[in-house]
Image (spheres, rainbow over the protein chains, first blue to last red):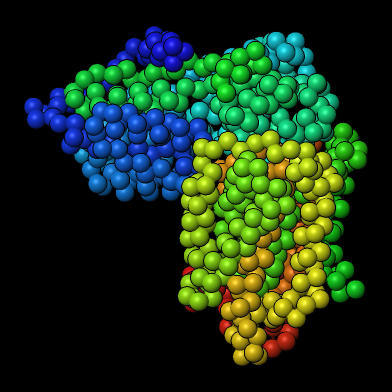
Amino acid sequence: MKRALLLLTAVVLAGCSSSSGTPAPATFNLANVTIAYSGYSTSNTYWNILGKAAATEAAAKGVKFVDVTATTNDSGIQLQAVNSELSQKPSALIIGSVDNNVFGTTIATAKAAGIPILAVDTGINDPYISALIQTDNEGAGKLIGQQICTDTGGKGTALVLGGTVGAQSGDARKKGVEETITACGLKDDGQYGNWDSATEVSLSDATIASTPDLSAIFVPHSDGAAAVAKEVSDKGKTATVKVYGFDGSAAELTAILNGTEAASIHQDNVTMGKTIVDDAITILQGGTVPQTVLIPPVLITKANAASFQ
Amino acid sequence: MQKQLREIAGPLLGLILIWIFIFALAPISRDWSSVENVLENSTGSGLFIMCCGMTIALIGNCLDLSVGSIYALASVVVGQLLKAGVPIPIAVLAGLGAGALCGIVNGTIVSRTGIPTLIATLGTQMAFRGVADMIGAGVDMEQFGKTFDWLGSGLQGPLFCSAIAFLTIWFILSKTRFGYQVFAQGGNEEVARLAGIPVKRNIVLIYMICGIMAALASIVYTARVDFAYVDRGQGWELLAIAGVVIGGTSMFGGIGGVGKTVLGVLIYESIFAGLIYLHYDAFWQQVATGVVLILAVWIDHTQRRASASRRTGVNIAKKRSLWSRVGIGS
């Protein structure tokens, strides 16, 4: 029910523009369709769930699904994998990009071959991209920002971490948080943790030591948020420094229920995986899909964390 | 003793200058907690322990780019076992065993096939990461209990584990025949072979020790954050190399020591913390570390050239370069 409601809201939030594929040939047969997919990395739980949901949907629709996700979140390796797969002429290509700025040549090649490209979770800034499905990252950042304002009363400094510089989703989350907290009077200390939990823990430790009025830390992904929450708790600072995360993994949910993490964001990665495959098929059939679908985020707090476990 | 002091004078002076700079410009840092913070992050992240393993690897001329993946693999091996209710000592031993096994694989490939270390360990880096994914991707592994937590929380446990790593590598390098052989073959592998040193066996041992240290580093960090996760250690091989080289261990093999690595890691972490104390962006830490790393390699390179010229009276041109050892150029 929750998922259906989210999807309904997502459709409402969908961009006005839409994408349509070239008309499908009269002999269009789903059994001849191959959808290639490259996610962020196979090492990441969130992405594994998304990839699995996409593969399950493809199997249900009777299309071939080729997953070329690399083991590491290395944009070079991802680009190489995507380009290799592109040479095999798949019917459509779905990309969950590590670095959304590296696909210029890939897009040109796909365009020349008439292969539609769809983006999932992270936008790729090119008009050729047929569809994008992602969490409303900036909206989610604002949601977390509002929670930070409520919890801290707008007092003190917040350490707001981004992912890697230029990573669209991390930047949007950071922007959403920063805009909201500065509006309610908090001082903003923005940094980038490179999606690496050890770096994020080190950054948090150093900021705790150097910023006496630190009242909140936002970490834009799950592994880092749970690690920072544990570190802050070990330092006995949970009462004064609230930790906020993103993705709501099991470790984060435990931390929220324990009171060591204040809040996180639930992303509906199952809906994203399923819908992006459906969109790819619709485009291949000559149908129309929204250019951008923003899945609304859900704030996870101690009050509702148990329902996500 | 005087020679050893002379050797560490550069990095030691660098570390002192960094802290004078930090204390002068960031009054907030004039507190034990600032120093404690640097010690905690050096040891609790496992970086120092990983650097101990990388020290023996670089001295023995055995570049290892797979340590980051071993770090991830050991985390999920220990996490899965603890989650299954296996007693902590057995889970920890299994994690260390996984590291040792990875090291043996690396060493066997390098010593038996002659594939350049860069290529061999780049390949195993991907392979080990893949194995880690198979074991731990998408699996929740958390809340391992207070006893395991001690290994990584605060300063005590990580310092204890780091001391074990330090003393082990120090003992091996300075008190054992194998240690002397590591220096000898790192300085000139061909001469060492002609002198009867079992170079191939030593390569396997070096990689095994390096693998065990990467696994121990991972266990400490897993305990620190109290959950295992497969997406860890990416890019850490370069951090480990940087920490070791900044301390003064040579990238070219045959020269170095784990005492220098203590200074190297402290310099790295001090730059990181110092810039945050001074409210600079973390980007500057990367710039500063890069500059220090280049300086350290340049000083090492210059000293080697000067030393070789003094010894032989000829140019060092015939000395095998780093690039030839990793398979690029001649």
